[in-house]
Length: 416
Image 1 (cartoon, rainbow, N blue to C red):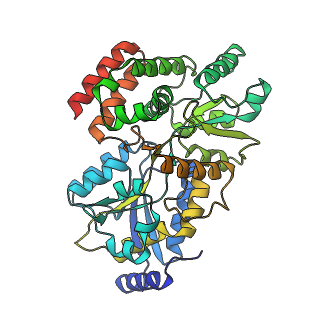
Image 2: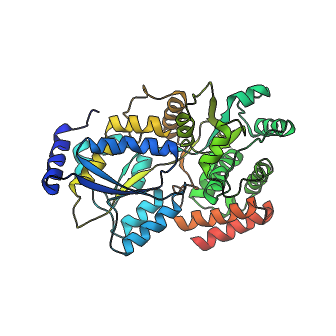
Image 3: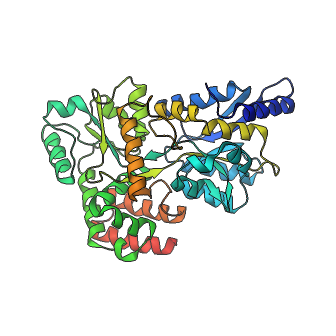
């Protein structure tokens, strides 16, 4: 695998060997990539480091949204035993940086020109006070729908472009005895669907006003009530066993023809690929109906914890490997996401990957690229968690839509 700046990597590798004597140096990496497709993608990074003589101590913590991993991390840091690197999202990175817990990666970043190739929207979460404090692995977009093509074809349904087309398709499938929507009843999954529903219902300016600006008028509006009404429609068309289901098991329902649609970020594609399925022939990928031209995103990053005031050789090598163009292509082809740098070719990406890269570039240039509330890129964790609580309560029938709007306004006000 080709390397960016071989001289720099060689120097890092030499330092690692000196530090480690005859044994390989190790990095301990805390992450939540535990599904089949995610594990396959992670192996690309493990192999990359092994080729440099760096061992990988795996510390997986299951849970697709990363909440459990962050709980484990807090315990480790409190005990004075921080991992070498930790998978993180959005405001979580900035919170740790503000506490002075993260290492300064500027030397690596300057040596390899990260400022010129990493999109500004990602740099907002990868830098703090002018210092690079994490290495972006990818950009995921969250407003995707995944569909079983054979199931849709057999019922004369094409990919819906609008909410009205989507509801018609769902009702047609339900009438035929097919589970229309594969869903996992976990707060982060419900919030992921809500993100897309709010964008579809109110458009990009409304999404920004409600979830990024936290405008009380937007949060308490009739448009927000309509978004909750649409969530109630979704809830009425999932199977009875959705509660607590992991996201990848919902994806498997679509893969196996047990359900038609799943609303999920593009990490779901890794599950289809891992199952030997091909986009266009076995499954379809399209933007959540009503959100064409808009992209909500999150970006997995590896934050390097300060372990003595300087970045270790192993941390530098890991950061460099993550941002190398060859790794960015190889990893994201498998993961389902798109590269975190703008100069990577789409040649090795499948149809969904090429579309994702095209959509991301277009949304960034048109001002329609927004951080995902559900995935910690629109507002700080306290606000995100407040949204989770209300959305989950509504989805499980504790609130009607009007009450949910009132609770959302109140919960976000308290959380700020």
